[in-house]
Amino acid sequence: MRHSFLDAGTVLFGKTRRRVLGLLFGQPEEAFYVRDIVRRSGAAQGAIARELDALLGAGLLERYQEGRNVFYRANKHAPVFGEIERLVAKTIALGDDVREALAPLAARIEYAVVLGSTRGPSKPARTADLLVIGDVRPAEVADALAAVKPAVHPKVYAMADFRKKIADDRRFFTGLFLVPPVFVIGEPDAFRRLGTPRWPKRRT
Image 1 (tube, one colour):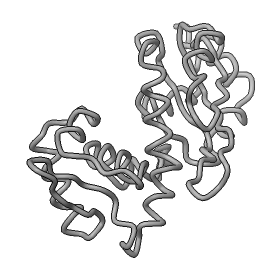
Image 2 (image 1 turned 180 degrees about the horizontal axis):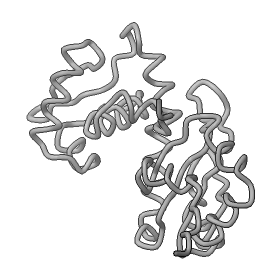
Image 3 (image 1 turned 135 degrees about the horizontal axis):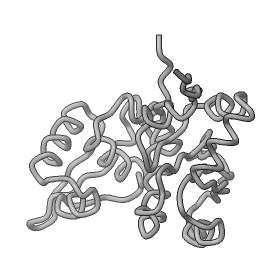
C-alpha cells in the first residue's frame, strides 16, 4: 500500500470546503457575509452556497441576517467545534497563510511544503518549518514570509541541489514526513516521486 503524503485537512475535505472551514474556523470570533466569503475563498458563489448550507445543516455554523446581508460564523456550541478548530489551525489556516505570502514568488517555486505544523488555537504560537524548492533566493522567501504568524522557518533548495541531497541521504527524504506535511505549492504525488531512485540507463 502506498503511503499518503497528504495532510488530514486535504484528505477529509474538498477544496471549497477547506476554504470555507479555513476562513470561519480559522477566525471563530468573526462573522462573514456571503459575498465576503466568496471573495476571500476565490470559489464560485454557487459552490460556496452549497457548502454553507451543508455545514449549517450539520450544526457546524450559525447564520443570522442584518439588513440584506446574511452572515455566517463557526458554531462554538457544536460538539466537534474544538476538534475542527484545531485541525483547521494546524493544516488549512497555516497553509493558506503561507500560500498567500508566497504568491508573488509562486511562478518560480516548484514545491512549498509545511513540515510538521505546530500551530494550535489554544497554545502559544510556535514555529513551523517550510521546505521550498525552486529558483528563488532564501532572502526573498524569508522576506515574503515575514508577516506570517506563527513564524515559519524556510529551508530553500534549487531542484538540482534537492535531488542531490536526497540521493546522498535517503533518510533525509523519509524523515520529512514523520508528521503529515501541508502542501502549499506543488502536487504530493509528484513530490513523492522525487524520492524514487533514478537508476542510470544501461548501455547496450
